Length: 310
Image 1: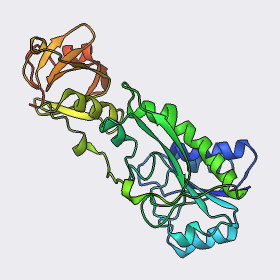
Image 2 (image 1 turned 135 degrees about the horizontal axis):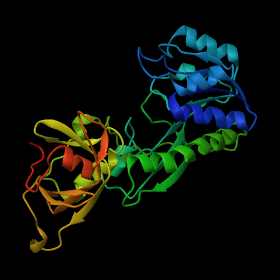
Image 3 (image 1 turned 90 degrees about the vertical axis):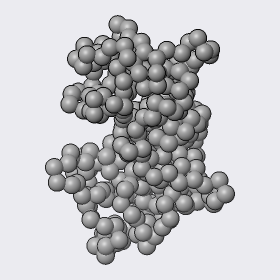
Image 4 (image 1 turned 45 degrees about the horizontal axis):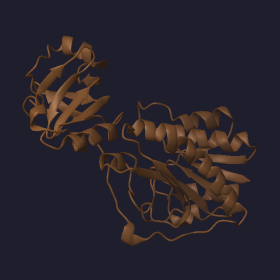
């Protein structure tokens, strides 16, 4: 098929590579302009290396973007990790329209941090959706969905890189085939089941040690590796990454005060929370690189009774 890819970053590159690998004709790539000083966009770099026409319009609403799409006369548009707004009169130009990837089971978890929030909320399942883009955010008819279990020790990184990323690339291929062959079915999203979540950024990632240990554990793994759930030590930000939770079953198991380092071993230290402890194995001080817990204990003189969020 003759297609254009609208996207950016590693996921966009992987989708480009997948269509090329099976012999499809990628007519052009539309990707957002890089900001000054930003790392080169992997999709742009890959497209230019393969001598594929590459456009970087500041807005996909511009007449120039529309004219470029019309001149290409593609069969289908493929939206693979797109942060720019793509209006209907742009995405409807291809012969069979455009399809878009979203890493949640729409209509649940619409929005930009749709992988973080199901983990943070303690969900046992997430997934991916291929849908028709509309002018509403992640609101278009569904073409294809795939479910993914969230295991107890899964993190944002493991859910995305082990599941939603590779499955999403294949789902884009499958959905494109269905659409071009006229074999797809479009299902309108049920607005009664819809939910929207905004960005999961530093402000949302702050740890409150007075929350239940289950909630803190879910927050940490839902923010690992980004944006990194954090607490403070002597006024400096400390991001926690690799952790394990321990739930108190009896009053006799309680050690230390809330937010206090209550146990130290050769490879970890534990912080008391409501209903249990968070055992920390890897973390990052704002003035240093990521390190294991034993190195952190030595570097910052962590002792029993050290108080976090201080």
